[in-house]
Image (cartoon, rainbow, N blue to C red; front, side, top):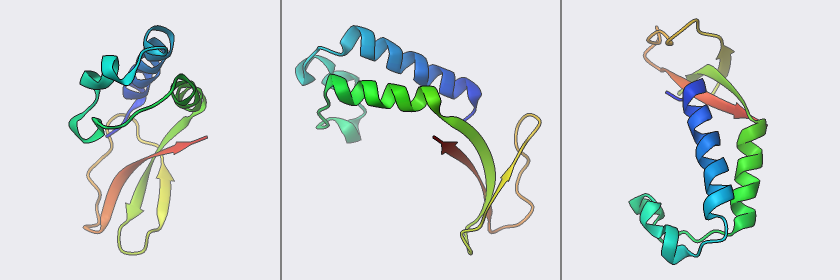
Length: 96
């Protein structure tokens, strides 16, 4: 489950990438990509755009009813409890 620390890591990684790797070619950064993303090519503008998005994003958690698609945004103290209903899933929601 995505949490605030995970978002801090993503923001830091995007800042590093934008500042240190932004001008590099796909040949230089491709070995950092996950296997399912290995053919993805992006520009410095792409990285700057994603960095801007994650710097402004608001993270919330919710309970999603997988049968109906209804989402209930909730606040958990620490770790979210196990959903009480079998058709519910805890999800992360990012707002921009």
